[in-house]
Image 1: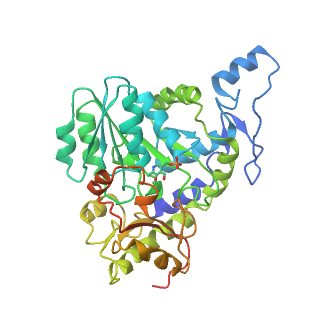
Image 2: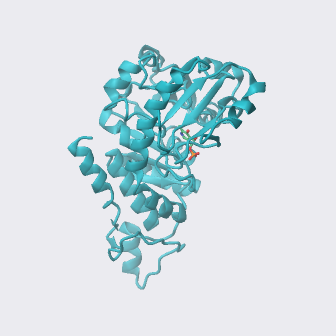
Image 3: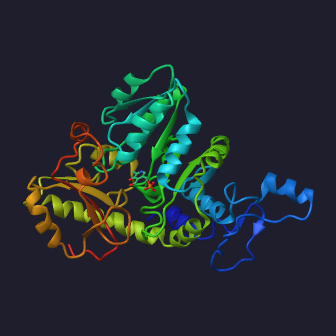
Amino acid sequence: MSEKQYKDESEMLYQGRVVKGMDFGKPEAMPLFTTAAFTMNSMTEVKNAYANGFTYVRTSNPNREALAQVVSFLEGGEKSLIFSSGMGAISTTLMTLVGPGDHIICNSNIYGETFDVMGKLLRKFGVETELVNFDDMDNVKNAVKPNTKVIYSEVCANPTLNMCDIPAAAKIAHDNGALLMIDNTFTTPIAIKPIQLGADVVINSLTKFMNGHSDSLGGSITSTAEIIDAIHPVRMLTGTPGDPNASYNMFKNFETMYLRVSREQASAAKLAKALEDHPHVSKVNHPSLVSFPQHELATKLFRSNEEMSGMMSFIVPEQEDRFDDFLSRLHFAHYAMTLGTMRTTLVHPCTSSHSHMPDADRRKMGITPGMFRLSTGIETLTI
Ligand code: PLP
């Protein structure tokens, strides 16, 4: 770990302690503000609160603000907003950035519900979305139209781990007056900071690795102050700000983020190699593997094999009648419809995260009935 990283790791623990001029009185643990509103004694106080303070909970809240400051620090962005969920962050931001007649280029390897936002939700509002395979950046270049406003991808896609060449996508976006929006959920700002590589907007589902305990739902958006200030009123209208209780809980859980996520990512690289050597596994998708088609890109964008992603997917024979037997023989790993939690979990994407997608679309993404997606926990690995 570099000296800079040691510094970041320690400094993160001191972020978010003073928000909008509000000093919490230096308690060791962050207090929880469940209040729906703040009281005022004069019109001057009211005006000041609207300008730079706290008024009503849907507009602003100290726990949300404190968490946003930590996320901005981690992602290296000017400002962040905390949302009710990762999907709340994605849909609210896209509703701000695009309108009728605009065009989005989205990676065809994408989380199932983001796929639905692009193909179903935004289409209802006259936004055209084109899904292209980002494995070849010429596909992205060729898809650009005069009305392209956003280029969208995950750093490593759910569940195939296909990567986005962020600097190349940023260049295409910026050469054409568009913004690059990147989902960092599978990788986290501990492994990669998309803004430093040229992205304009970064979304995280905090529900996953960053919170890490499977006990809160939340999302974040990090960008320039100008973009965040444009999203903020839309978040108020859509009613998608994060709940104060969730922000309080996540702030607390963030304190162990480096310890947890570093271990999960290092274990994932080891586990991916072990699974690849297993006779019943025909393929493993993890960027650390030499067999991963974008391994060279991964070595350029990440610091090391051990600092990429805690996620992987692997292919076993399509014998669904034997899946129960397989699951019942696992010692620690267990089936759970989430990812990024402290215990190792797995899901079968065809019947969970991507179940609502047409089979043909899934197969185009490399998601076949023999695929399992695995999220590495903090258990001690003995391999
Ligand atoms: N982005 C990715 C890559 C995801 O995997 C998920 C959920 O699994 C989301 C966004 C949505 O996050 P949330 O469940 O917090 O709404």
